[in-house]
Length: 321
Image 1: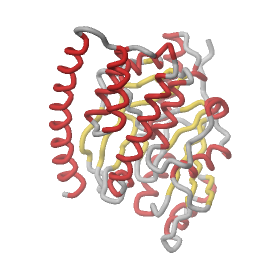
Image 2 (image 1 turned 30 degrees about the vertical axis):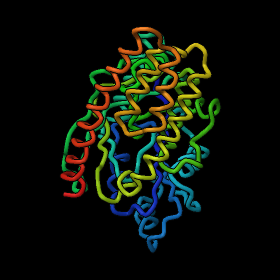
Image 3 (image 1 turned 180 degrees about the vertical axis):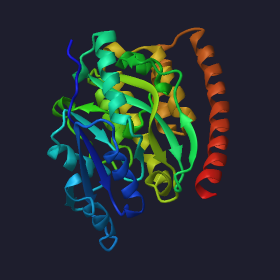
């Protein structure tokens, strides 16, 4: 089979992001792979033209657009509608691609096709990340040993704790947007989670490359820090509905699936989603299974407290420090 060399569209949404935007664009321009374009979408920045000036200095090396502010999802959608690529790649304005990001992922696509006889148009390709601080200092790499190289929706739902998608690592075939639509503009902080979950339920496989290809920046101004409380409410509400969507699919009415989702939501402080998952677990459980589930709840409660304490310490040192 002939090796694929797809055209890739890197889309960079930005709002008041002049401080880090050059780093992001420079990292995109330094790709060892040559068959791609860069689209920068200024989402109505109000910083006295700083973001505009930062982008315009690159001239025709990028495609630059401006729009009225509507949030990250709307900026991504604006770029997706104008992209020429076979695949969509997302790069946040404060993150960076490593130089071989696209080249290594295209090699990975071809390996997945040959090894699993997979249809690349039905696959979402992701990779590992490395965290950096606002001064580009490396903090830690995050490579999941538990994720499968290729996982179906059923695989993921039964092991939901492994379903973490770093948005800036993805390659999404353009056909996926025609099938399931684009990012949900009504969601301010979980538009990415919503999109991955819709892909999952639509039958796409997720292919994970155990290689660091993106540097994700942690800093005080990022939305996940500024809007953490809003995000927690929105993600809790989203997963509460997602759990019911899973239940509506008869092939997914399995105890192990809802236990897995219960565990995932509970340790992440999603109280309403946790209750919804628990309801379906109990509905599917009988006899001695109830005792087993109660023991599971105790273990999850302990891990939740441990995880929350560790997370707070880490973020206070790295971000606030």
